[in-house]
Figure 1 (cartoon, rainbow, N blue to C red):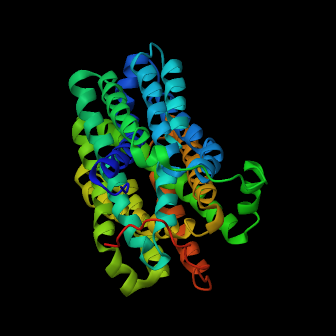
Figure 2: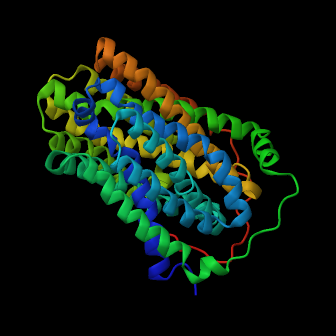
Length: 402
């Protein structure tokens, strides 16, 4: 029986969704964490950067493990490891303990989304892959929306610890369902390459296009998420919105991504990959510039919607190319792509934290707008002469295109 049957796919979707949610749950609770532990908002944001650092670094482990032992098997165990991080966060009695718990949760979550994307790359021909990846993107978007909005609501109503209790329960159910699934348990491990994990990583880094992709996604992550991390706190402090209301506004960022997910086939046909990337960069630039100069909270509504659409237009195109950087080492390649993105996020949030504490939120938004427009244009230009390598090898099973 295939993993496509309802039980298997629901379990895989559950941990994918939950790991996306876990990335963003600390964004709306930053003011509450600052008050609870008696620290600044910038210092409370260590819960975000610690998660991102661990998530990025552990890609170096999980990518090769997925290539060696089976991507879905590794995803299941990573989901169970996420339970530990969230239980520790639930019990944290100091900001330092919470930052450590978030580091451990990020380390465990590193084995989920990138390997799901690599699994798609193994099973879907390139010409259909961007549309199929967009289907999985809806899980990421839904998780981010739930992570921000539900976290804001639960924090406001029951306190921030309730958020981590819910995450621990969901990961426990999903991780067990994948790990115990008959097909996953029967899946044989592949023979070792004979080169070792480190040499597999070096083989990916030896490809010039792969190095360019990693640089672009690092810069994109640094600027796209440093602004997003502080947007809920900005709406609370600047305009007096409640936590749940601010989180609901920022959730429009994810709604913008849904427009991309459901319209990607038409976008590819009419704009091409380069046109999608360019339009995405321009959209993000305009959105963050509007947030930087806007004088009313209502302007954040269209800004978040357009910014989200722009981000996923650019990132979705990059993500599709990431699955084809080195097809023979797809798990390693996509995990390096994710690592570069989250290293960028950790750097961006750390720098933005210092800027926010010293001179405020708006300079961060302004820098994000300019940088994202430039990186979108640069990546679009690089696609002009780019020819995609040979399509993915035939897989044992295939995901039907949308």
